[in-house]
Length: 177
Image (cartoon, rainbow, N blue to C red; front, side, top):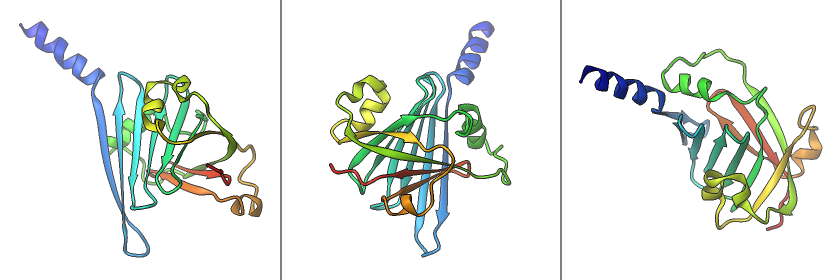
């Protein structure tokens, strides 16, 4: 009986899901609420930001090396490859859910250019991304090497996503749905 309880405890720890909730007070007095849910078994992180019309939802699929973000105000999804050298690992996100996040960690940023061509088969990116993007136009984005490129991208309609204190992501491009 003790062995069964020990086995259940070990499995519970190794397959446990982690959750974190962050509330940030904006400069305009508004509140931004962000949640992170981690499924360790499937190696998936769901990041959600609740901020009215500027809300978004994101799935990070660490097995496939992909992430997708559904932008509420834009009414479309963007899928791209994860830059594992910059994006926090699933373990770093998990530590943040346990309060072990380093408060002085440097903020990193990535900029992506959104393709004008719609993804024809979102199912090719896996069940989790398909569930997020199903029913809305979906586009693939490429990471820009060497930074954002300054004013050119500011004119191309960038949407900025802040993932906890780890990472800033800019999705740039005027997509015609």
